[in-house]
Length: 399
Image (cartoon, rainbow, N blue to C red; front, side, top):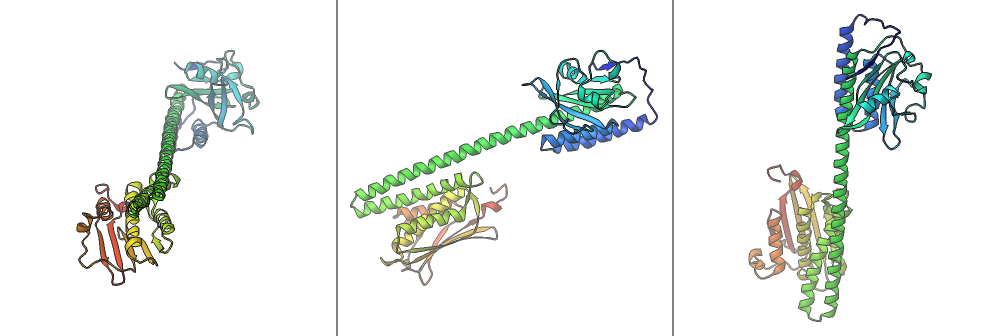
């Protein structure tokens, strides 16, 4: 039950306008409730609580005392009316000898209307220096644990009423709920940050592992004199490198699981060009951020199409290969164009897929991306095109 100190000094009866006073308190409490539930930072919220609580109690002195269990003290963390240096540095003992300590230790609200006449409670030095005569304290709890004490003080004659405790306790409850929400959000943020770190680490490890496999394939290529085996190993190495570059983008990117398509495809093209120095690969890629689920098959498809152009479009003198990716009207359009010898007039991708692993992969990757790859003659060479729905524009039902 509340502790209300009775003093021999005698108290004046409540003045006129009691109803308006209580209605004003309820209005202030409602306003703070909205602010508290929206608050993202603790210190501004506590400071605002002391400002509004002091206003509602018609007092220029209010403070929030945070419990510091490691020091067993109460720190003045926020407040109004106090001299410079009090807020943020002044500490109080938590024993039963002060109203705030009593409220913290017992959980009971305390009203002390005549501190100078009381033998039960002492007045902390900094409060005496401000000539504080009366105080009202309520405990603030978070998740069932003591967090601190909200206190309103006054140097004036008069008294705090038991009815004021409802207003004060309302503030304390809102502060406690807001702190619990902020703590929960921080735990969630920390968990997500930890999960992001694990995801980046996993992508980094996958990239390194694939790079090791690629290096082993390269050693095997150097050991084998069979041109067919060398070509197959080179194709496998290019595919592994494409996947490794995607994972490299995943752990380096600002957003976990998101890949910058221009960086990925241009990186793949640069790597392929280094393996084919007689060819020039030009890239014009829109700045598109997509998920890894789309980026990996897209990177593999670019690898297959560019590799095919390197192998079959030109003779040993080489030539130019153009890679473009455009995002327009809810679609993403990939094209790989060369100025080479072209394809046979009767070329059929499905038929070619039955004979060539590369063509089979091109056909399969196009379907995986939700589109169909077409390969046609342009009059000057070959154009391979894939058009898919932009996954960034997909509705929840389509995603």
